[in-house]
Image 1 (cartoon, rainbow, N blue to C red):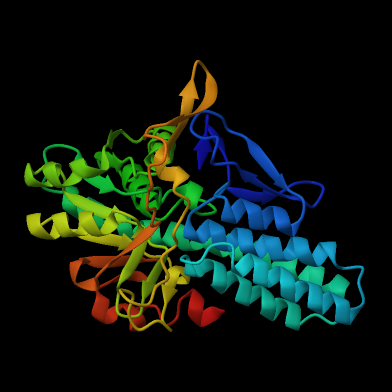
Image 2 (image 1 turned 180 degrees about the vertical axis):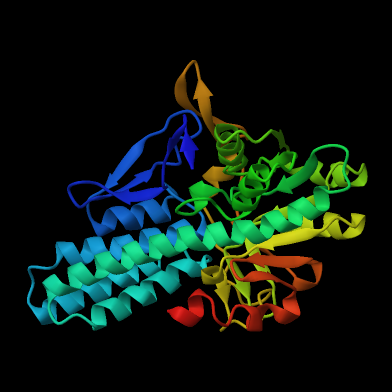
Length: 368
């Protein structure tokens, strides 16, 4: 999508074979490109949230595997296989909730298995990483088409802009391009649908700041909300539809997404507001029967809750907001039961929970 009018992907290769990402810790104040020279750089970038979003995490894991294969390509076959096994395990363990990372690492294992030498493996993993990135762009574009159909239909009888509420950042910054939720928003806007987006700030990492910045860069009117304001606006008829992303969706339709998503789903259900999940097929986990008891929920550091990061006098600043010694819990995700989801917007169409597994049978999991 666009930054200052120029098109960007969120991950790409430079002329020297390194992998480049936009360091999301510095946004929205500074657009800074970080160069990942080796696979451990990719592990750190995923684990410490230099990048985030399930589809982008998967692509970064794939490129991390390529960086490892390039780094170890001078080893003999046995040492190469041992080194790559350790590297893939590190990448896979970098973050536990998003299924895209495991999915991408497994695809890289298959690419490695088909290579006859370390040098050939480096070439094969690069080709597979590129394929995963390109597939993600195509998946998000197709998902956006189906999502825009929904938004256009909902907007048809409105004499005002359609009010969409989002949670966290499911934009192009969370994917390779287009985004999941934002793909639908951008495509609807291109079709002439008048839109306004309510953007949950999404504590504690305030990822709504990324959504608001991104929407602004791409010309979509939006307003940031404190996380607890969404239900109030739904009661007042000021939200027409909620669309959220997902880090992992189980076979029965239970949805793991950024902490606070469940509360939005409850409020939407109570107020008769449609609640959709933008679900690219690599984020669907058909091997997991249900999510409420089975999806691992990442517990992150308490400093993310106890400290606010921002900008003061034009410089990056961190500010403690609680008394010394305060203890904080910081679950990164929650699980929304399938019964609260109106529909799942995928690249293959829109499904309810009952039709999800069959609907995605030919999707990315089927092709891998």
